[in-house]
Structure formats: C-alpha cells, structure tokens
Image 1 (spheres, rainbow, N blue to C red):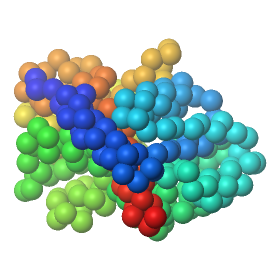
Image 2 (cartoon, rainbow, N blue to C red):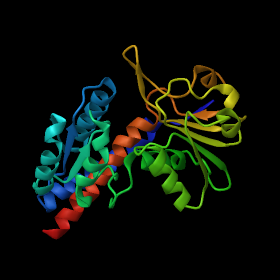
Image 3 (cartoon, rainbow, N blue to C red):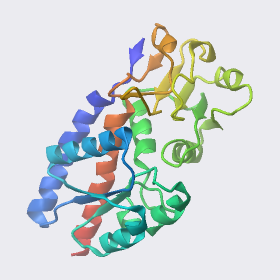
Image 4 (cartoon, rainbow, N blue to C red):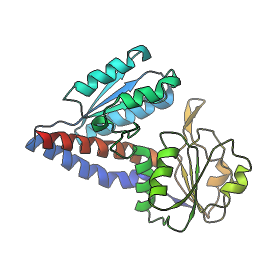
Length: 270
C-alpha cells in the first residue's frame, strides 16, 4: 500500500508561504489576515478552525475567529468586507441554518473569498486545490483515467469536479444514494470520496491498483473518521490517503495560498 501524505507535501509549501508573507510584511507593510465566521459548535469544525489558527502562526499570518449567532452573520460579513485589515473571509460551513448558506457565501466579496465558494469567486476552492496538489505531488496521472468523485458538496465534490472537468479529465460524480454505487465506482482507477458517511467505500468497490483519496469527515465517538472502510486499508495494492494527514493539511495550506494571493492583490493597490 502506498500512502499519499499531505503532511510531507505541505512542508515545502509552508516554507514558501512564510517567505511570501515576510516579503508582504517588510516591503508593503501588509499583514495577511483571515477572518473565520462560525455559527455552530461542532468537534469537526472546531478541529479545522484550530488547525488554521496553528498554521497561521507558523507562517506569520493572522486569524480572527467570530463565533456568532447566525442572525448576525450577514452584518458581520459586511463589516469584514469593509475592513481593510482583513484580506480573506471564510464562512465556516455548515451553518446552524443551512437554508442561508447560499446567501452567506455570496455575501463575501470576491476579492476576500479565499474559500472560493461564492458565485463570482476569483480563487479556486481550497480542498479541490489540495486534492489536485496531493495527486500531482505523488505523480498520479489523471489523464486517460476513469475518475469517480463520490459526494457533490460545495466544499469538495462540486468544485473538484468542475476543476478536473475543465482540465479535460474523465470525471463521473456520484453520492451515497447512487443506484449500484459499488458497480459504478469499481470502474474507476481514481476515487475521491467526500460524503461524510463512515465506511461507505469498501474493498469490494475498488479495483486492483486504484488510487483512493478519502476527504470525508464525520465525528464518531469523539473521533474524526472518513468515508473509507478499514478493509480497504488492509490491501497492499491500493494507493490511499492516511487516516490522518492526507487531504487536511494541504487544504489548510491551499487556503493560505489563497489568502496570500488576496493580500498581494491588496498590496499592489497601495
């Protein structure tokens, strides 16, 4: 079994980002700042927010977290849009009331939409970018392969499908309700799963030699778990992300790449 470690790859990018931020701070007096707006308490969400805060310290970026009642969400976003010291804004999903998701992400101005989720987004969504980086970093060839993306959510599946389809790759999108899901996925040489359904992807669904990226996250008994069942990880013929340290570290890295890009654009306006 070959492991796709996002931790190993992110180290190289972290060094480059730290240099870029030092340059922004020294030459332009611009201090890249990320604002995270959160409306729900969740182990999974809190863990990801903490990772972003820790990563920011490593590269000398700033992070401010706003845990608020959802009734204040749009006003908070608008205030952050107008704050010249803030270069990137994240609406941490899911919201307490998911029916307001579209309105909330579109309230972030494109120049500060570092998650790339708004209708007029200028930047690539971080998790999609991270998965693309991960596979490229391990020289996984995607051209000419059958690619299955399981899960069509706005954070992972949908933007990744757009990214790869626009690159001319052969992508099919499924979810956990797809009829004959096992038969469909078994046709794929590359599988990316992001449904949040623990154990959805089993060994019998995966052809020999397949590449599997588990970007699913769920909380079970206080632990974060993915979509891939344990029997997949017992196989010697698959290439797969680890239980920890796969897509997650690179997602945070990609997010801060977007933040640096947004801060540099602001610096060039000065």
